[in-house]
Length: 178
Image (cartoon, rainbow, N blue to C red):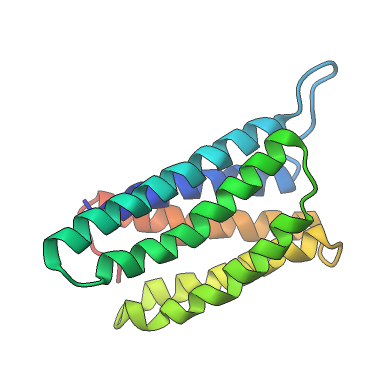
């Protein structure tokens, strides 16, 4: 199973929790209790750290074994999302201003489109990149008051299922990603 499977799983679960929070499911503190968004933040932070660690592993493993830059290019893409999840996770845990995260989301939405040729022949990966454009721009739009949080919740749940957990399930069951 490719190492990217771990990235898909942890990122997918973090996006799932963020989506449910925006849908209002388990997002309000119990009377006298802690804010559940802190838990969402910790999961998101851990996902980002796992992504970044996997990016390093991918570089080491793929670059060292075939001598091409495939590992570096794949790790570069993973790093976009890893850093975003770290920034979002820390912001949620610490209750920080989300506008810098929204600004980061805009770059994370657009710049990875340069990786489209990397997935030559892989229609699902290309559609995932397009899906992520919408998802990350929606994050920025919500933070800046241009989109309702519930809409982002739906987008994030769909993003979790289609762009992270479905590819993980395909790889985990021994299939390739089309």
